[in-house]
Length: 385
Length: 187
Image 1: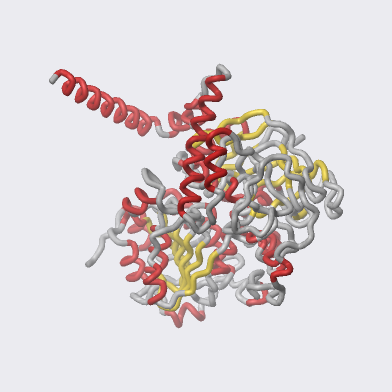
Image 2: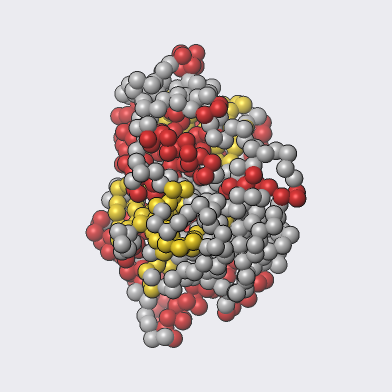
């Protein structure tokens, strides 16, 4: 089968790989019909995630058709169209029973600091991902959800990560009616977080980024205010002023480890040195721009080492900091209801459709923010087989 | 310290926008955007929020950490974190460790996840792995098509000027270094 493989920072190659096999009675094999490149795939692409091995197939956002199921998978059958959440989880352990599917203890032997994720280095379990024609889906009786007939593959693909992740970012912000919410990052997750903040009754939403084209998109898609932080000398000062000096009720960090805005953070967290788990600029801005007693929701991804974070300010301001990888399965039912009610059309963020064979171009376009890209989708050759 | 906004933000923030800019907190608490923003307030009630309560089953304990799940047979070497009580019942089987990078990974996994040495060793192994891959390609008589793997066709298509500038800077920088070295050698 055809699959993309990681070859080192900034390099991916499409190769012929052996078909995945059932390796456990609760596995399934899924034929991928749509996959996406996620902003967090770029952290791998840029070589920022430890134990990213040459030859691994990346991709944790995909939907497809069940081809084969293991002996113990009773709730799926070949031919079912399924959303495959990016989290791999058993559904039974201490954490899964609490609904923390992103923190399952039974799927990642390599680390306890992270759960299991498709195609996201050995730091999240060493699984091959979905930027391929076929993929092994462990615990297929727990993770995948049948796609409702009213939801097409494009919308469903966004339900594997970006949309429910943005939704959870907004939910973790503990928004009360009329709250002011500032979202850092106008990538897909930030856009969904800003859009979903309204679902929770926000009174004001502002999104911050450095790319004008993304902010223009955000104004339409998320119906929110925008700020290009390159337009001001001090974004935190400006955000305080915008909130009449109170500070925002909630701040969402939807950027994570590749944040721009500080040469020192980028030099020590991205390149040339990788001593930090990335650049924590947007997280620090979130801490500083939120009001005392406010909430900081961290959905942006950081590496497992350490970061220069203004934890002193967070403590002195009495902030609530809420974090996690999104528990996709927990959010999915409600997210699908919003699609079916016409509140949101996730596929509106897709700007590029790229054949799997050309995926290297997709990575480069996305990483370099070319051609006004928001979200690239990957179409495997057997998508319509 | 007054600040002056630049291009896009100045234009946008001077316009009235939906969402309560310029309203007091009290006014925002009363505002209802449902007529203009689809779905506004539909998850305001806590019972509509999937993450409430945060812990679905707070009473469960350590006996549920490793439930009895049929175990996948490890046909390849699987690294296990020292912070795990046992090998997880299911794991990925992509890219088993090999060569020098594999040895480095063996070494890195001896440290707990709290140690910087673990993560930096694994990142070093990643870079070694990349060199091993290129050498492996060359040994098989295959020269990696690096421009294709880096997707540079799209750079030429969408950012030809920027691409030319980058190439120009690289050429000039190399020329300056070469000239400096030659001059130094001549002395």
